[in-house]
Each structure stands twice: as C-alpha cells, then as structure tokens.
Length: 238
Image 1: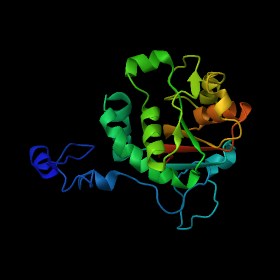
Image 2: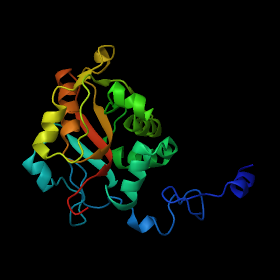
Image 3: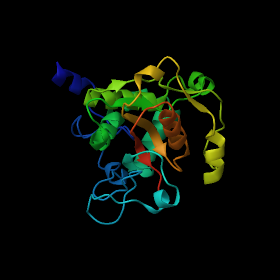
Image 4: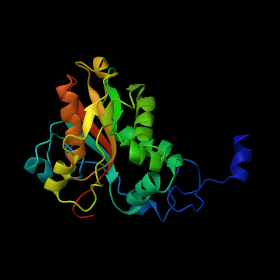
C-alpha cells in the first residue's frame, strides 16, 4: 500500500515542492544547503550557533547583554533561508501540514531539556489572531514535541489576555514593552504546574521578549525550572 501511494503521490520537498528521493529526505538538493540547522557549539541559553565545536555551557553575547529568566534554551535552526521560508509558510501560508516535519526537528533539538515530568506548553496567541490564522503554530509544534518525548502537553496553559501589535520591525526595548502584561496563567491549569518543569515552545526567537514574559508568568505561578525551545533563532548575520 505504501509503495502504491508513493507512486501516486511521490515525495516532495517541504519548501519548494520539487520531487525528493525518499520521504525521509524532506528537502531537495536545492533547499537543503540553505537550511541552517544548528549543530555543534551553541548558546546554552537561547540556542544560537557559536564558533567552535564544544558543547559546554557557553552563552552568546545577546544573552550576556539581556539575562534570560529561563534555565536553558535550544533552537533547531537559524531563522534564514529555507528555515525562514518554512516558518512563514506554517505561520502565514496556511500550511499546518508542515508541523509534523518541523515538530520532529524541534523535538530533536529540545531533547536535552526534557525529563519525564516536563510539561510542554506553547506561547499563546490572542483570540483575535487565532481566529484569523485558524491555528496557533506554536501549539502545533508543541504537540509534536510532547508526542515525540511522551510528555504532558497543555496547549492552553498560558493565555494572551491582551491583543498586542506584531513584534516585527520593533526594537528590543519596544518588544519588551509591547508584550508586558499581555500573558497570564489559565486559572483552570494553575494547580497542575506547581514545582513542575515546563518547556516553552515557540516558532522563532528574536529578542526573547515574549519567552521572557511567559517564563516570568510561569515562575510567578510556582512552576519551574523553565526551559525554552524554538524552531528557529534569529541571528544578526541572517
């Protein structure tokens, strides 16, 4: 049956749609080189790639300048090239079918941050934006991360009680001010997180303002330690 389906529906590149050799490849030979997966040395706080090959506890310049309230962070890829195209397609191009593949990449990157009792939770969307987009891309990714590691996923653990303008094209300080006070714990879930480690999931980290606000809300509610994992980390060179 699988062989017949492959004849009828040959595997396609996730990014451009060109044929690929097998369903496992996911990206064609043109798109693969432009997908900047983060391997080797990376910032232990945000996952940004760093020079060298060591995987010791190193911190990037951004995280030294802006201390992060969470314990550790990971990213699957750099926000640029093929990675950027895939995230924009998932986020704005009505492509939720990308979530299983991208979620698997994110789950692999997030593996060092998980334990058996970790709760997985996405950064929330405001209802206005959720109705427009039809789904929360962070929640789709979080679901696949939780399934991969057999963890509890609480998609509505955090709520966005205030609609905020998009963070794009804002400076660092403006991003932190824009998100201030917008997030809160879902009262129905508050009793489930006391003393539990939480893994926050989002699609992209730029300044870290949204993840910092979410972390603070979780800490105030008694959860901890908090870790973060994003599909892509925006870095200055890209």
